[in-house]
Amino acid sequence: MNRKFSLSFPRRGRRGPVTTNGFTLMELLIVIAIILILMLMAIPTIGSLKKKANETSAINSIQTINSAETQYESSFPANGYACNLSALGGDPNSGAPSPTAAQLVQGDLASGYKAGYIFTVTCKDKVSVNGMDRNTSYILTAVPQTVGKTGDRGFCSDQFGAIKYDPAGGTNCTQNLQ
Image 1 (spheres, rainbow, N blue to C red):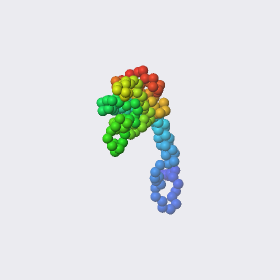
Image 2: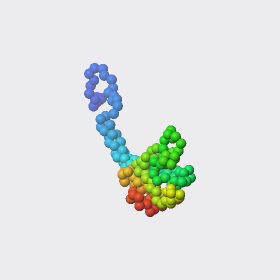
Image 3: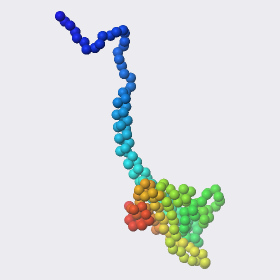
């Protein structure tokens, strides 16, 4: 009396083994949910990396402008330092450099807007020599276009080249950049 019990249904006709190809809907939904969670964790990191990159670009741009101001002052000694960024810029195809277009910085920086920052140069002191004004100092500022979004700190420099920053994103630069 050997009987075998089977929990499978009897076959009616010839069918091959049942195989599933691919993933079930539930498996796909779980994978998508995990990917979304990882993305939500990464988004704040990406935003802070973008701000850090903008700040680094602003610091490098300030160094570039400081170098351009030194070259401008030695190239056009009667004028002294340039009082605006457009004087440091200029199109190289338009002719020789001049005091109003010295061709020392690229066009994006000469426009005053680069990598989420607004750059300005203002002359501070001047002396009159033979009836001509010669600018003897300048103040350079770089502030975020939107504080907290494109950058957190504002940066300042002058003819001496030291870079200071304002943690509030303005032009009240009191802390030395390290």
